[in-house]
Amino acid sequence: MIKEGVAKHPYAPYLFPIISVIFSSIVLYWFTPSIVEEDNYRYMLSALVQSEAAVIGIVITLSLVAVQLTASSYSPRAVTVFRESKSLCVLIGSYTFAILYSLWILVVVESHCVIKIYFSYILGVLCFTLLVPYTYTMLALLEPFEIIRRLSKKITKVNLLEAGEHPFQMGSLQSIFDIVQSSLIRYDSEAAKYGLEEARKSICKVFLENQDLKSREENTIAGKIQHFLGNICNLVLEREDELFIQTVVIPNIREIRDAGIRGNLRMVCEAAVALKKLGEGAAERRLRNILNIVILNFQVFSEGVLENHSLSLMN
Image (cartoon, one colour):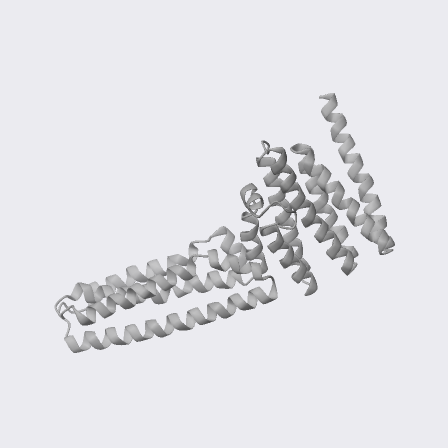
């Protein structure tokens, strides 16, 4: 899948432009004359500039359409992922430099400056081959998995604190929730599961890597996490998705509990509150099957906490 290829080999597509530039340089060096006729090189450079300008215009237009479709499909906040991606900036910068350099060659340079003329050709090859890694990156960003992966990396202590003190100001957690919500609406359980798992991993990482949190910072972050888990619980309860609750939501709540037992007990509290909210919501909606699942897991939840607490006392 594209998401796995991007994660494992993010720079692999850039090998194609590098190899193409090296190959074109060798060809120009060995198989072209040392003197170029003025009319020929001016015609070639003029055609090159026009094609580069046309291509970059089409690419920018299609990129904006892709961003708009992603924002409407998942979340307007997902636009930040495209904005922070440097691939479009690199592409526009490369084409701009190549176009301006070729125009400068046309105006200033004479036909005996073969190296400068051939360098303009090589820039053209580089620009056109850069479309390969750019297309690869854009196709990856159109998948919810890659968007979630990039958003989850932004869930840090600094990100959560800078988002604001109110619980509903969740930063990247809100963006992931929007994607989970839209995925469930489209019955894309795999993407929703992936989003919840990545959010859970990032939440655990924030608490486990920041044991020296001040009381106010801990309360602020915990409030945002509680709000996020509460939104997830309300979402699955509204959909009455028993299978998703049993196989995805509750296991992730248990993982937060287990991570809290190992590192920060505040995480245990937030996991318990989320499970409690899930049970209360199921009781209010008279969803007996979901309520039975929550009660059973609450027993397992409590037994796990007591067991680990007993082991810690014995040690």
